Length: 289
Image 1 (cartoon, rainbow, N blue to C red):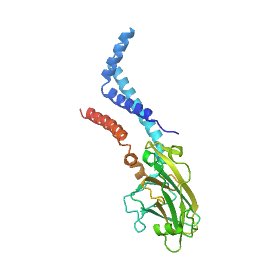
Image 2: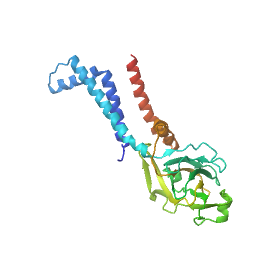
Image 3: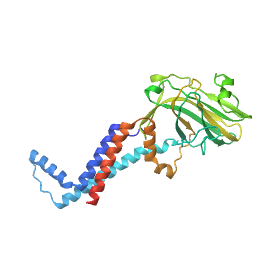
Image 4: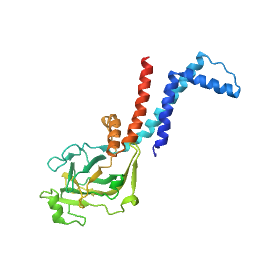
């Protein structure tokens, strides 16, 4: 399922507004139809029963539109659950991941050269640890590619070609822990692969991903940094299982808003929510009259 295009969504919104208007003011629709009939030479006398039929038709149309919107937006429950990234994101105060097997996404950024963001989770021996990196599809980030390292007990060191002494001085790696660095080595700019997320209508450049089997049971960290001293926004994904709870579904409007703000889609977001607010205000106004 590819979801609804922006044009299709706008058409559905306008149709829903038309349906709500037609329910409360069917006489206007009937008057328009009467004028059309007169132009084509058809005579037809409307009755109170006709008004009821029009209102029922408008209700059906609005319900059909709502069904289509929710049906296609069901793709949202197959998306990543956003992590709370408001914390310091240091090794001492990392961003916590409750279950690394569930699909999470951290919408975060490296503010300064040398910054490192830490994400912590527990994993059992033999469990698959999946991590991937994306960056927002913004012109200034087309050559941006942050690195990440999986840090944990029993891991064999792999610095991905970076200087080991420099990595150990930058990352907080404790005794008994190993670190596996993952860097992006594919094409940058417009040649890089992209990913379009249908629920939030946002686009990203794909970067590196990795799947590692946890060698031991214990505490693991994903540390996001830039060996090239780059700064900017990124989206770190951890886990594959798409498992949304009731609370996550209830938060969908806020998730939609927050992600679009992060992706700098302010203007289209304001227009879209403005249309919805106007339609809702009109509906409430008509109900209270």
